[in-house]
Amino acid sequence: MLNLMTYSNAYPKMKSNSDLLDKLFNDSVWNDSFASSRPKANVKEEKARFVIELVAPGFTKEQISIHLEKEILTIKGESVKEKQEKVRYTTREFFAGDFTRRFAMPDSVDTEKISAEFNNGILEIKLPKREENVDNGPRTIKIG
Image (cartoon, rainbow, N blue to C red):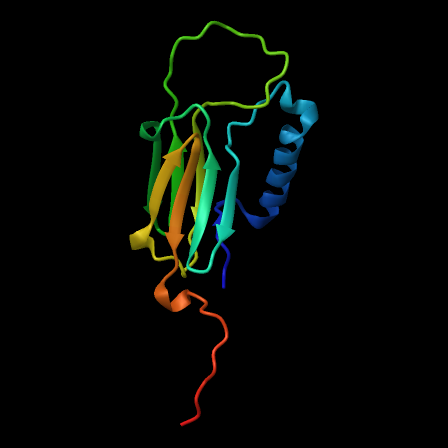
């Protein structure tokens, strides 16, 4: 069974370079200067579903949209653009700006039954598995 994975349309060779750049810019040495605008996500697999938990502090549910197209789930957050005074940070570990995250849906997900909730800055997207893909554990087969 395939696992739910972050979608990247980059070529496999380029992906390793992208990972290297992500590591470089997400390293604590750089965090003071370059805050990441890509929210962190957990993906867990349960018996009958996958669950994506995405941290989006400072957003309301009205500022977040979720779309499914060609088996790619896209999550977008658009912050309210307000005129802010120029601030000089001494440390900046989070960024509440616009973001986009994409996840490739495995064939086992029933895309018609996807649901989402947003509570206390955490977006939870529930991706039920198709009935035929739910692992009901070992069973005994009767010989006829």
